[in-house]
Image (cartoon, rainbow, N blue to C red; front, side, top):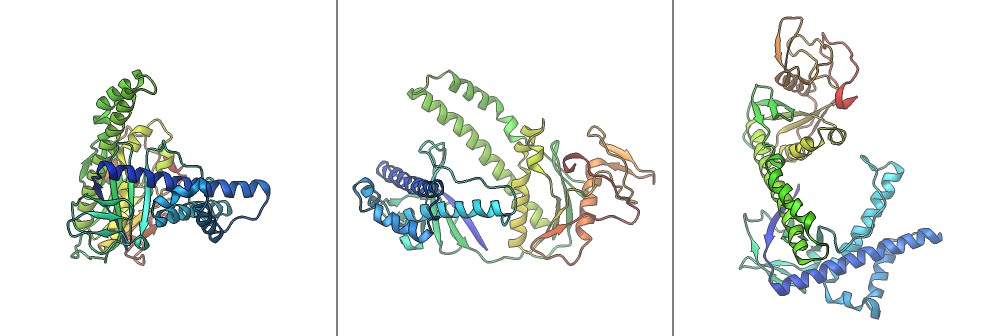
Length: 397
């Protein structure tokens, strides 16, 4: 499988100028490709092919208006053109229904004011990692890299990004072999929540760190300072950078915490099952800030790819499955449980903790189909023997 390894870059002043030139050239090529295709659509002309766009780029570099495109590597310009082509293919596939998921909008022009700028070099660019640890990029130079760990194999491409805080990163795409962890007998079902981030089927409760909430005071102070600055002033640019650093620190802290928790779950258990939550729907409710602060989607994505890499079983229980209302002892599906009801008693006499009971039901549904592949399990609604069919509730409804 292919993974990305990201490292911090520390370019010099001259290298920053060269990178800014490369970002600008890639952005212009992308915007030119969008403009040509929009013009063809408005005039009714045939849609330009990828080969025709590549030839047009080569011809444009010979004109006085675009002669400065030759100052950067031709590979990153071709990659910017490939990004535009890919954006249109995804757009058309979304219109025709071939692409699953949300509808993809038409490609838009890139701006120099975007909070993120990026360029990509493939192996054709002949980028190199030198013996002294620096990254050599064509027509940019040897950039110092802060290596936190070594690369497992030779990278096939590298993407250089500039974020809103002014930090440069190099993201290498490498191919890694699956490394199966020692087998274990543990299996766990996870019920994700807000008060407790994760509740396991064996009764453990992981407290939600609420990283965004804890940093809200400092972020609010920085935003107030930004609101008082005069537009166009140097102090306003400093305040913008300060707000961006607050957001970046929150994101980095959350990502680090989720990586540690997901790694622990994968190492300790042979199988991990979670509920397929409708996070996009929950993000439009009054709990939107807390839902986005939790980072459920990121956590589930980490569990999925780590399970595939380390030979564990991973499954998503269908969101229509009544995990909260079903008794994990007898299988009876009761009435809808309001959020303030944290414990309830089943007619069979079992006393349930709301979240632990849901995690046990998720584990039971995940175990129901033994024919599922190890890499990914997609569990549909499983009705236990004593259960009756009920209408969906909550976010599923």
